[in-house]
Length: 338
Image (cartoon, rainbow, N blue to C red; front, top):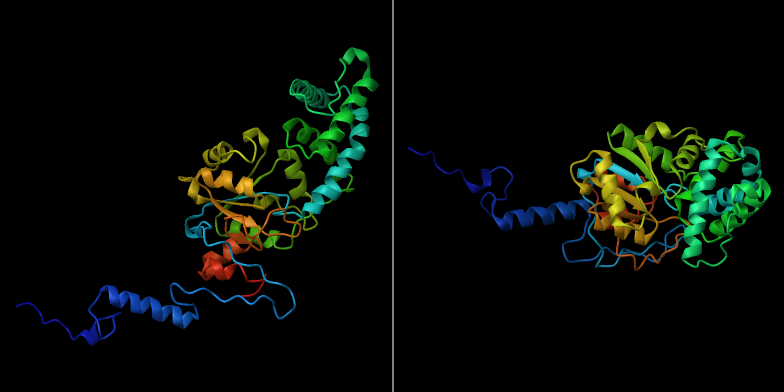
């Protein structure tokens, strides 16, 4: 004979007013859990004061049309932009670019005729020819080697200065810049600058088994120099690889598809990409990656119109997995607070 059905009040995990697994029971349970956690009920917004107690303004939440929060429990790899994400924009614009501009002539003069510099010159010469054919203003033709060392260097320097001023993301320029920066890092004239939250984030991701990569328009050599010579020491031990424009430009979805094919995860959605540039975020999202917009000093896009979720610091993607907090709340947590 079948055993009698136990009283409803004895059913594990269910209130006395409902039967196990019913929709109303689940809804009541969700509401009670939210109430216990101090979270608002579904359909209500989280109130955000305009001003913090310490006087700093809070960032507003992302637009309602923004994409949902990344499913961070499935993330296996993190890909980081450098400028405006791991490092201040000012480090690039006020330190790296001026150093390359001011030292390119000295570098070319000292290394002229070497295999490495011959390759740099060949790539720049090809880029200049392409620019001339496209009618780009300010391009200076590079004379043949037979014209002599000085005329060739003069033309190269003029073109490099114009490319740097225009902030062009082209492989020929980035490769030469990396070689110039190498001298600066080796002589300790330059130290890699990263935000304070970068080292602990890299350490925690590494300890959690999450593989971290860098994707920048700067050459892979330049990336290794930056992270190998930071004010916090050598951070390369936490990084699994570097990507540059040889996989494609950062505003093309195809580039992120190539990265997915290289990092060894089953699905592109298992990769989280952090950047401060909307167009890069859109390209990565189109390729199927999860995306967070990095909010840093000097951010160049409107926080209200990106259409992407936003991160105040790199630890957000780690803390979300540990704390299981709603993303809308996590956006407003300051570093070191819960």
